[in-house]
Image (cartoon, rainbow over all chains, first blue to last red; front, side):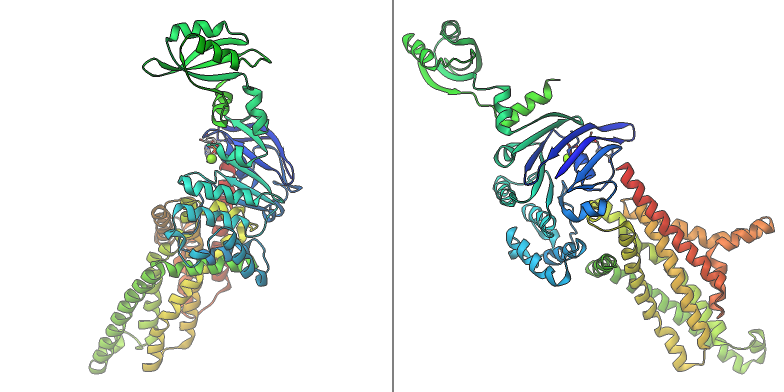
Length: 311
Length: 259
Ligand SMILES: Nc1ncnc2c1ncn2[C@@H]1O[C@H](COP(=O)(O)OP(=O)(O)O)[C@@H](O)[C@H]1O
Ligand SMILES: [Mg+2]
């Protein structure tokens, strides 16, 4: 549905995109991850035809973004990063305007607008000025204008940025409900929604693709299940020495000193071993207090930091 | 065509949801009304003196409403336009750039041309409303005097094409900056320049002077107020309008390249 090939973009002498390539299949939700300044917004602006790339190719819904921009624009819904809306317009008028300009037939506009206001839970504020709405509502108006023409492709630039936790959950739920027949690209630098909603992740940093994979694979590829976190009450030096002798344990490090004699340790496990029971009995045998033991699961944030900081 | 109409409608509406249009129209009417009153009062004084002193009548030639009231009135209105029109055009692109709404607008399936024409004609519509309101002045003259109708009509035609030229240039200025004050200032500066440049035509070589006064607004306006519509003047304004529309399209385009 979306094919990006060797895209570059120069702002003056600064190269914001250094040849990125990826594809998104029909019906897929792709997470587009990267820290601030990675080039996410730049890529999305190219895909939506706001400005052209310096070189490279981009196709959306089978149309070349540079050669047939109008065809592409008819088929996408775009939510820009800071949700720029006409503050002096009433919500329903604004959505009627966007529906019209996106080519919805005049007789269908009323129905479309009503439907999209329902989907985005905007019916209550339909007669309010956009400028008077809270950030969360504005975000939904932004989403509604993107959806009003029932587009095949949705491009959402950091759709949860600047929202409070409750609003974030609502917007994420909304986006998840949109999945299915639509193809969605969603960018973010605060990743939890990606592990929740996306089937695939493209990680970019400094204008380059660093990794492409499923959120699950990314987790196991980098860390696997080869680390344990153990919280023990006891003398730190002895514990490290003794645990290292346990079968299947490779390395032991103090992760964090908690309070008094309690510390958290990270235990590296040798390939294919599961030393949990041996570790436990070793701790008990020495008379220390075993307070907690769990496998270390990297969050997407941690993976992400790991990926982009290893050069 | 539909996109043009949708943008036109939206822009026109937004003129009247903010106080801008009301304030500009009100001030415009107050000042032009004041000038009209003064001109008529002057005319009345002269007429009165003429009735008791034939010398005065001789001095002013035929006491002609068209010469003494209608022409100065159009002259005054065009100067007030010079001061007011940049306030109507300044927000058209600047605001969209500042708030970022231009990004959504230009990623909708519309062409730059449709966007530009929609904005241009919305502003022109507000301007035409202003002109229609000033129509009360000639109407009063027609009721209480016998002005020639011809120069009134051509005078309005002149104001219309002049206003359209101001709008075209103002929109261009607005496309240059996301700051409305800068957009308005650039428009003022450019308009005053095009207005005043004919003054320097007397100071230079006649062949160059001719070119200068051709480029300036002023000479082209004269004929309209005299009741003459010359195709040359119409072509001048048409070229002026199209030139700045074209430049605006180029700016929109180049913004895209620069990002
Ligand atoms: N209009 C612009 N002019 C110059 N540099 C820009 C412009 N827009 C973005 N950049 C630069 O390009 C890089 C990528 O920006 P952007 O695509 O906005 O990143 P992201 O959305 O991932 O935070 C940044 O270093 C940013 O400073
Ligand atoms: Mg961004």
